[in-house]
Image (cartoon, rainbow, N blue to C red; front, side, top):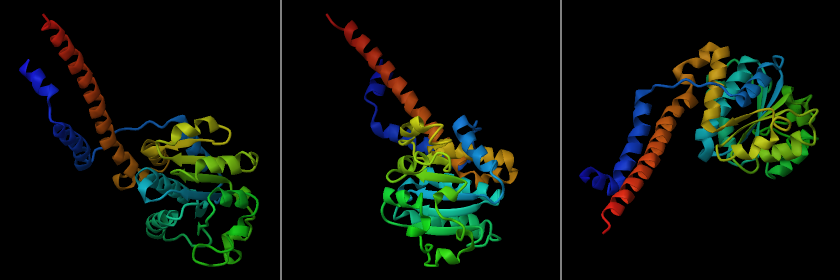
Length: 290
C-alpha cells in the first residue's frame, strides 16, 4: 500500500512535467499521425476544388493573433488550394487585428510561395472596415459602398479584379475563418441565409465555436473545419490531390496534432487513474473501520 499512498499524495508538479513531455517529445520527434478526412471537411475541399479555375473566392479572415494557432493553418491551406486552382482571392476582415493575419498569409503563401501572382489581378487585400456585422450587411448588396479603396488606399475601381464586382453575391464562394464576433455566425445571419441562391459559405473556426455552427449545416454552411483537427484534415485532402503540399514543411496543422493527441491521452489516463485511486482508497478506508 506504500505505492498507493505515494500516488494519492503525488505532487502535482509531476503531472505538469508529464504534460510538458507529452507536448515537447512529439515536437522534437517531428512525427505525424495519419488523418482521415471527415465529410464536413470533404465538402469544403470539394466545393473549392470543383469551382472552375479562376473563380472568385472571398477570404474573410475574422481572427487575431490569439487564434492563429488554430486558424492560421486553415487560412494557409485555403490559400494554397486557391493558388493551385488559379482562383481570384479577395482578402478582408471584420477584426482590427485581422489585417496582420491577412498580411502574414499573403507574405508567406503568395509573395514568397507564389511570386508569379500579380496583385490586383490574382489577389487583392481589401483590409479592415469597422462595423462588425454592419460591414457584412452592406457588402452583401454593395461592396464598393464600403470598400472604395483597398488596404493600401488604391481605388477599387482601378483594380482589375474588382471592376466587375458589385457585391459579395458575385463571389463563387466565401471562406470564413472565425474566432468569434463578428465571424461565421454573422456571415450566416446576414449573407448565406438571406441570399441562399447566390452565396455559398464555408467556415473554419476555433474548437469552442464548432458545436454552435452544426445546426447551420448543410444549408447555410456547406461544410466546417473545426480547430486544428479540421485544418489537418484539409492539409491531408490537399496533399492527396496535389502531392507537393504533403511535404513536412507544408503540413503545419498535421504536425500540431501529435502534441495534442499525446496531451489528450495523458489527460484521459490521469482521469482513469484518479478514479481508480479514489475507489481503491475508499475501499481500503472502509476495510479499516471497526
